[in-house]
Image 1 (cartoon, rainbow over the protein chains, first blue to last red):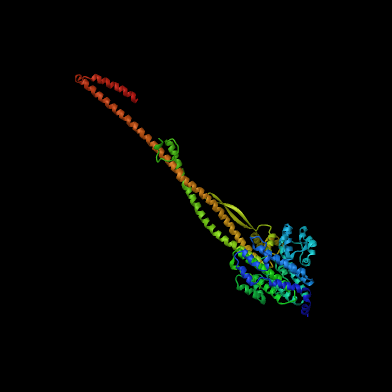
Image 2: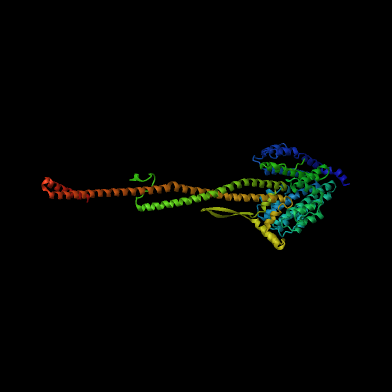
Length: 351
Length: 288
C-alpha cells in the first residue's frame, strides 16, 4: 500500500533530485579509474588522471606541490557543494532527511569546538577545521560561552542537536574523557532518532534505511566494545553507549557489554551470520582488518540503495559512496607520496 | 759551539751544564709517560667511537623503516577514521606524553650527554593499573586523575580506535629510535672531537716535544764531553811541561856533577850555566 503511494507521489516532489543523484552516482570513479590511479608515480600524475573524471575542475587552480590532504580537501569541497545543491532543491520530508544526514558532522564539529573552548583556543582557527557539512549558524558565537550551562542555554538550544543533549548528557563534568563519551552518546541518540524518522516515512525508504542504520548501530556497538577493551570504561558506561537498535539488540549487546577480551567478542559475533562472514573475510586476508570488512559491507549496502526507485535511501547511499571515494583517493595519494606500493590496492572499489 | 750539538736539528736554548741535564732528563721522562698515557686514552676513545659508529649506522637504517611504518599507519588511520581525527586529537593534547631528560657520563675524561626518555602517560598507566588493583578501578577520583590516558584510549572509540592505537604505538617507537639516535650522534661528535685532540697531543709529543728534548740531552752531553776533553788535554799539557822541566833539571844537575869532576874537559861550561839559568827564569814566567 505504501509502496504504491511512493510510486504515485514520489516524483511530484523528489523526482528531479533523485534523477540528479543518480546522475552524480554515474560519475563516481570506476574500477578502471582506480587502476589508472594506482599506476601513478607522482601526485602530478594523479592530478592528470583526475582531470579526466568528474573531479576535473577541482584541482585546476592548485599550485604545484600537491599533498594528499589538499587533494582530499578539494574533493570533499566538491562533495559539499553537490550536497548543498541537492538540499537546496528539496522539499519537506526530504529536506529533513538530508538534514539528518548532516547531523553526524554537526556532532563532530560541536565536540571539536567544545574541546577547543575548554582549552581556550581561537574559535576562528577551529572553525576552519570544522567539516562544512555540519555547520550550524550559532557556531561562530561559541566563543562567548564560558560555562557548560551557558553553552547549552545560548547555543545548543537553537541547533537540531538540542534534544539529544537534553536527554543524554548532564553537564557537570565536561572533561576531555567525558567529551569523547558525550560524542558517542549523542551519536547513539542521533541514530535512534534517525531510525524512528525513517520508520515514520515508511515504504521503501524504511526498508532500505532501517537495514543500513541497523548495520551502522551494530558496527558502532562492536567497535566500541573492541576499542574499550583495554581502557577503563566500565561495563555500565560501555553498555550506555550501545545504540538500542540493530540486529545485536538485545541479546548480543548484553553479551558484548560483558565481554572481556577480543576472543570472547569474536565468539559472540560468531552466532550472527553477517558478522561471521565479515570476521571470516578479515581473518582470511592478513592485510585486512575488521574495520575494512565493515567498510566494504557499508559500500555494498550503499550500492544496494540504487537498485530500487522512489525512496530516500539513494541520498544516503550517494553521500556514503562519495565519502568512500574520497577516502580511496586519499589512500592512493598517501601510498604514492610515501612510495608504499604494496598496500596501494587496499581501497574499496565502488563500481 | 752550536754546531757541536748531537743529532743537529731543533733543541732548547739552554746552558749546557750538569744541572740543566738533570732537569731536561726529568722533562723527557715526563713527556714519555704522558705520551704513553695519552696513547692509551686515544685507544680507549677510538674503541668506543667505533662501537658507537656501528650503533649509529644500525639506528639510522632502523629509523628510516620505523618512520615509514609510522606514516603508513597514520595513513591507514586517516583512511578508516577520516582526516578529522587529527584535529580532535590535537585539540586534546595539553601536555607532552614523551619527554627527554638528560644526564652525562664520563668516558676517559670526556663528558658525553645521555638522553633518557621519560614517558608521561606510561606513569599514568602504571598508576591506573595500581588503581584498579587497589579499588576496583571505577572510582571517580581514579578516573579524573588519568584523563589524559583515558582520552587516548577512547579516541576513535566508535571507529578506528585500533588503527589510532597502532599509529600512536608506531610513532612512539619511531620517537624512541630518534631519541637514541640523537644520543649516539651527539656522543659520536663529541668523542670524535676528543679523539682528534688527543691524537694531536700524542703526535705533538711524539714528533716535536720528545725529539727536541732528546736533542737537547744529546747536545748537553756532547758539550759536557767536549769540556772534559779540553780539560784532559790541558792536564796532559801541564804534565808534559812538568816532565820536561824535571828532566832538564836533572840533566843540569848531572852536568854540574860532571864539571865538578873535571873543569878542563869543557870550555864553554860557564856560558851554558848562564843559559840554563835564564831559561829557567823564563819558564817559570810562562807557566805560572
